[in-house]
Length: 354
View 1: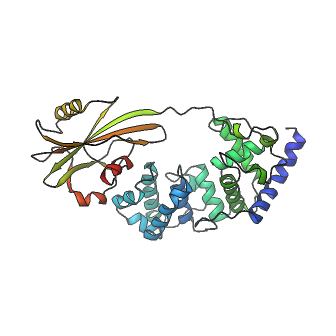
View 2: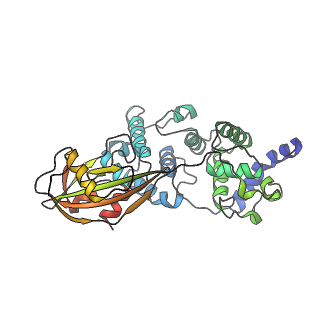
View 3: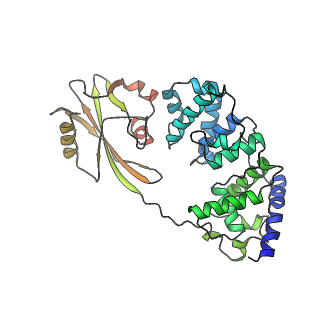
């Protein structure tokens, strides 16, 4: 794209986008137009790595139960994790709790109003800080998320990988150059909506696009080739064999305390292997670890369950065993009807609540 064309496109980008937003954007979400930084922050944390359709119900539940940051800060961690159950990326929940408590106690419940201060909070990066800053305080910071990467890479024909340091820097500079400084919140919401409903990852609505006449990707028939990523995701495979130990109508569970997936969630006693393993071998390992006595009665073995995470595929199986004495170790015994009070990974919930 020639310099003169690029300069002209940059000038008309925000006016075209805001014209679309004013005349055609019908996307409805409960946090749109919100000025309360607490609610904006909550919605943004929930929507990190989460589809809007999935996050909507969680947002509504959190707002109903914790209408302000003080109530969230005072809530027991176990209750917050239970509400978060099923959203995944549980480090978000830990950071949510930590930040809520910090703002409630140290800042007396007043959310910071400076971009850099907001960005310094746990769980808040440049994107979330820009969203809170622009939506709540009308500060001129451009959001750069997946939608923005996609729109800008296509309209301007940018081949720089969006997952590279150089690519992220380039798109951030371009996004801030295009930003409507007088209406940053309105502009940021508009470009995210546009990426979600028009310039979609698959089957974008190019015929209805306001940038159709000036979109580089459309004119060069490269819409499906942009944006560019340089890294391929490698999926790690893990096998989880759970011992569902039943003792007098109670079940042994424990909290995951290691710095790994599902940290702070609960689980049954676990034997993890690097490959698919026979049940007899699993029981021998459990006995060797001291989590199971010899000659205990196996009630049943479940079908195989699977859960795909961003970089991991977890394959799980549940071995239900009736034990004659309490299991040793850091387990607690919980009655079956009370299991739902604890936060479990989705893989285990598939077994508990078929």
